[in-house]
Image 1 (cartoon, rainbow, N blue to C red):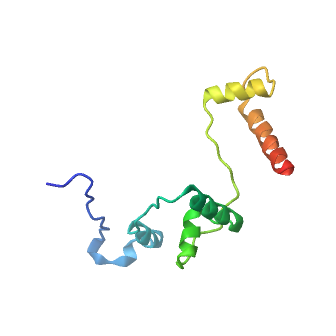
Image 2: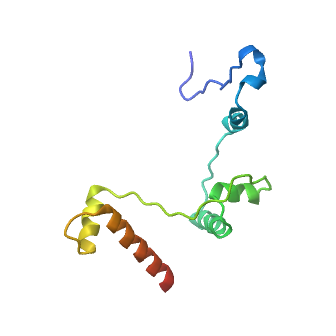
Image 3: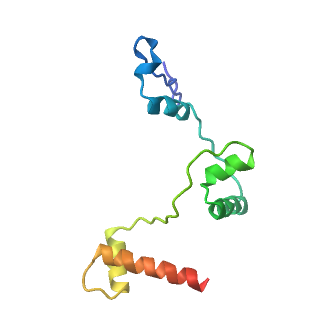
Amino acid sequence: MKKCGQKKPLTIKRHNHDMSKIPLKWEKSAHAIKATQIAFDTSVDVTNQIRAEAAMQGLSPSDMVRQIVGLDVISKPKRPRLTVSLSDQDYTLLAKRYQMEHVDKLEIKKRMYSELIQHHEKS
């Protein structure tokens, strides 16, 4: 009987053990499949500092951790992007804030973008 939380080892089946039949892109991802994610419970100061350093260097926080501990950082540079999830209620509130007669999601996105740029320029 399998214990709760115990994971079965992941295997990749190959026909006739011929590696040439597996697409190269799958072979490259086999290394990622074997990776284990670990988490660190640190103080807010430590976490914020590492995240800030990562952002300044165009890295993800996990790539920054890899760099700090001397591991290779092989990921592609990250596209500078901010994301936020908005509910229907959020859109309604934003439409009111921007004095719009109805919810226009694209127009709300444009106005939010302008507000973010203004915020940056004030800082």
